[in-house]
Image (cartoon, rainbow, N blue to C red; front, top):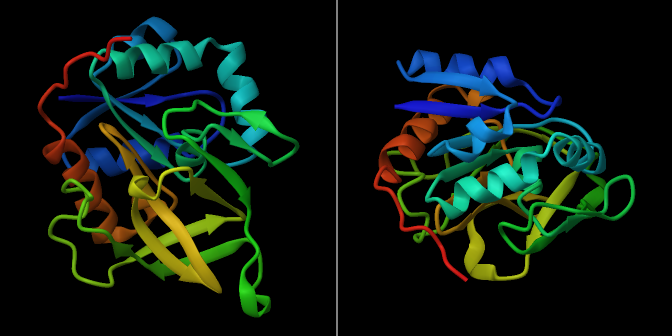
Length: 213
């Protein structure tokens, strides 16, 4: 099994690759659209601005490549900014279109109680029962490492598979079919993060039929 880590010029690519190495899984950092389009397991990491990220993705032709991979049955995991890019649009640095793989909008966090933005540090995951196995084997109230100032608001509440609390509820994990996203950083979340990455590899192994229409 080979995991393709999408390189669009932003993100902690080596940290993600190192986490897969700890699991004994081969991964490759790729920016070639054709290689991405033919991949069956994609990871989309990212740190930084939504608008800049989508600009980079568009310039490199990676948006079409990612969609082609998904249409061909690939499984995708977005991490932090990578999760946000799965949305229809984001408002960071102006309104920008996202990949549109999970309909929704990315907005600036406005936590109650005067909590600081960005949200930085470990926080507790509240997972939903329809997570499809992404959180298998994790203890209830497991902690993961966060750093973000914007949050994903899906159009369909059924897309939400995990939340956390930071002044108010924050969507921290989403899923639509074989496209998944987590707001936290599994590669910085010690054993819990490694378990989640292993689940991503094991629980979504079977190839899906290509979408039509």
